[in-house]
Image (cartoon, rainbow, N blue to C red; front, side, top):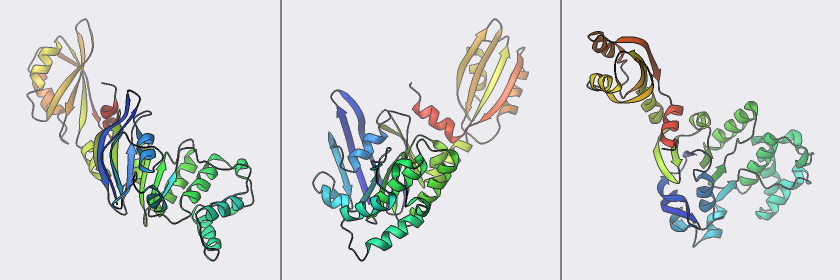
Length: 311
């Protein structure tokens, strides 16, 4: 359905998107995650034809977005982070206006507007001007706008940005309902949002893809990893590191605070098994004192933080 290959975008000398490639099959909800400035919005703007790429290729149903922009836009709905709405129009009038722009047939238009009002829960505000609506209702109007022509693909840029917890849940449920029939490509920097909504997650950092996998597999990977925090007295980091990195399942250690005879460090484990008994047996055979010993189970949030931290 969507094929992106070596997609790159430069703003003068700054590389916002750096040779990313991925495919999105029909019927998948794909989440593009990353911190602010990672390149999410730039990627979406190129996919929808709003920006021209510096290099690379974007194919939507085997149509090039650069060579066939109008054909591609007919099968795609796009909701940018700030929905471009006319605040002085009634919701009812605005949806009719969008239906006319999308060239819906007069016989089809009333039914389509009713269906979207039901799907996006807009029936109670159809008589209100858009400017009076809350941020959540404005997002719903923007979503109805993006879906007016019943597109096969929906591109949603930060669809829950700025919403309160109740509104986030409401928009999430709408997206999941739409995703049963559409291919959806959405961006967010909220990990729990992607976990609850998306079939697959791509993590992007500084314009490059840092991870790409099914959501459940990323969760499983996170659950199989942990960090053990130690505080040892009477040893150097080199001594502790040499002692415990020989234990199967410990990939590396990281030095923490050190003061006087006290040393703090982290042991990173790549297995689901709790390795504290093995570490304890090793340290028990030495003259060192073990002052702190805490296992911290890794989560998707931890993996996201590790993949997108500055260094």
